[in-house]
Length: 322
Ligand code: F6P
Image (cartoon, rainbow, N blue to C red; front, side, top):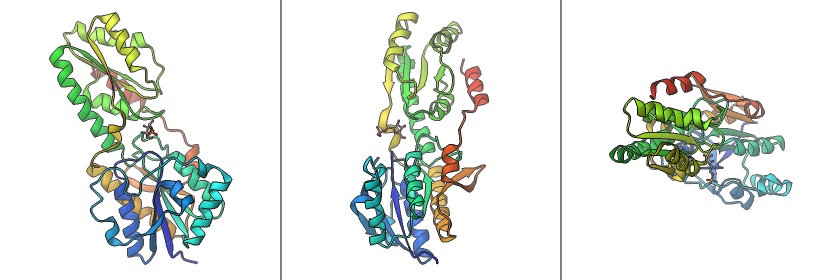
């Protein structure tokens, strides 16, 4: 039997473009004759019944806004059987027959648990980390890259004026995609990512010395948060090279801001696609982008995939940054 009512929620770390995805889910569903409710506060909101009806105007003027209008949370209670049962009874109470979950891999595990208990869910990848294996670009990644690039460009100005070195930590949890691409875009002398074995002498000190020997006067080393230790590295660089060195952790500023055009369009496409999957009677699927096309995978299969860093890109970055 065709579904009549769906819900949408955002979960885990927020990402610019989530609002565009919410808007697309709500409008696609309404325009195809479904009722739509929004769940506020991620899975916690589902447990507590913070569920409100949406209309076409509920999602006006949000496509350009960062963050998520539905709020987000990481919910420890949802991981318990009692929390899960509360969530399911709220869905039954509100006649919700399918749920679109916008978030990262932790959020998809929750969606999978719900589907296993007979409740159809579709996942949309929204995370700045770009660490969803089946998906080439996650919602928020492009915006975060541009934000980091802009901040590092600003650091470059002041590093160049003073002939200094900057060691910058960027987000990405256990993945180095932000670090690698930002490193290329800002011409970092060194790029340190968790996917590549790290040797401080070879990857930092020697690269700085090599660049200095050719006349370079200011340096940026981009470090993925999965490696961290930027304060310690800065002190060691200063001690070993004599170059005045500063450490910066860019932090949560990377998660905010106006989504780029790319993220808005990707999120809109994914939102519409997710609703169509539910209308087609599908569940337990993750929407993904591959070679510019949208495809979908079983959540379990998607979570089991391994994403690797593009080593050709990494090696090219090292070659052209000195
Ligand atoms: O997954 C997004 C992300 O920003 C990661 O890059 C980072 O490791 C983590 O979330 C930070 O989480 P929190 O917002 O809970 O501090």
